[in-house]
Structure formats: structure tokens, C-alpha cells
Image (tube, rainbow, N blue to C red; front, side, top):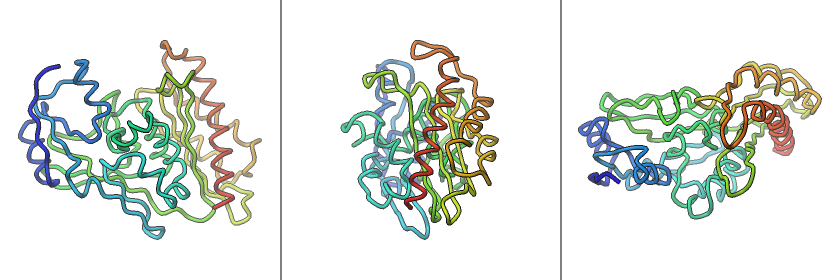
Length: 291
């Protein structure tokens, strides 16, 4: 591992100042469960690592049913699925948080770090996209916001500019009769990287029989996680029955560009998209009817 300097920032302004001063050689450290491995294996380098877990805003988890969820970028995963209201109202995000590594990893890893790592197979990103999550970013030029579905630009690369820091993620309040889910396929538990991941969210009418709104997002089938817009729109106005889900699955396949690797062939991944879209929608609808 290449030697690097370490600094623990106590505020957003301090972290931004440190990151901006060190330029491309600076890295923000949240849980570090991806970055430490990358530094050790030499797939990434750093001149300065800025620990952001001592910054109050990045460790803050705020939830109010009227205002929604605001999740500091360094909040560890276990705090999401152990929070009863968040687990109920953002079940798809809780699904993802619960399968990012084991219990020890979940006590360090954060949803914000998982997003910034920008892996095409990141479990949290399809769930965030399905819930219309927004990134709040601070940098030398001030603050800005960006939808999560626009945040990743290539494998391992995101849209943070020099000196910028992801401060928090905001998920809108959940309406009545809404539900979400996230599923991934892995060939065995020891292989903890999604071959395909799908996040889905639906809002039903008062009877629970018709879909009024829907969002489907895909992971591990393209260089970045994808929002399947046409597939999502195809469900609006349709009966919330499994007979209507295969078409959404077929439409979702049209935006994917899966690769073949040792975890699965492109053809296999294409097939899994349809299977997981149908299954994820079925769970989301069931949860929406109970909400």
C-alpha cells in the first residue's frame, strides 16, 4: 500500500477545505469498507485520506413522516434497518442496507459511501433511485443537489468535483398505499456481489388494485445503475397484478447492456432482469397494500 496522510475533519467546511487543497489525491473516508481494500490492493491511490465520520451532519439521521428521510452520508447501514419507521416506510432501502456485507461491515459501511464508490453492482443505488433520492453536496463553490440517478458516471467514478463532499441523501416522504423493495441475485452467499440487482417502488390507488405511479431501477447490468423510465411508465394506470409485470421486465431489458464475466453471462443477466423485476414489483405491491 502506498503511504498516505490522514486527517479527521470536524466540520463540512474543514473537510471541503482539506479535499480542495489536496486535489485529486484526496479521498473522503466514511466507513472505509471499500476504500481501505482498494488502497491496500492498489486499485486506488491517495495522498490524503479525510475521515468524515466525526462531522455531525454526516452522521445525522432524521426522519419525519411529513418531511421524509434525511440520511447523513456516513450513517452506518445497520441504523437504517434497525429503525422501525424507516424499515417500514423505506423497506426497499432497508432490504439493501441489510445485505451490504455482514453485520460487522454494516456497522461501518454507509449508504453514502456505497453510492460514492459508484460500483455498477452497488446494492443501495437501485433502491435510492426507486425512492427518488437526492444527493446534497458541499464544495468550494457552495452547495448543490443532484438526483441519485445522475450521480454515477462510470464504474468507480461519480460526479463529485474537486473538493466536493457528499453530505446527505434526502428521500421524499412516503404517500399512503406506497411500497418498495430491492432484490439481487447472487449465485451463493460467499459471492457477495450482485449479478443483477433491481429496486422497485409503486404507489397504488385507494383500493389497492391499480398502480398510480412506479419506479424501477437496475444494478449490475450497465456501467452505472440505471433508472428504467419506460418500464416504470408502462405500469402507470395498470392493474396491480402479476400479469402486468412481465412487460415491465421486458422493457427494462431494453436499456441494459450487461457484460459476461465469471459471475454470469450477459444472456443470463438479461434473463435475470425480467425475473427480478417481476419479483421485486410483486413485493413492492404487497407492501403498498399493507401501508
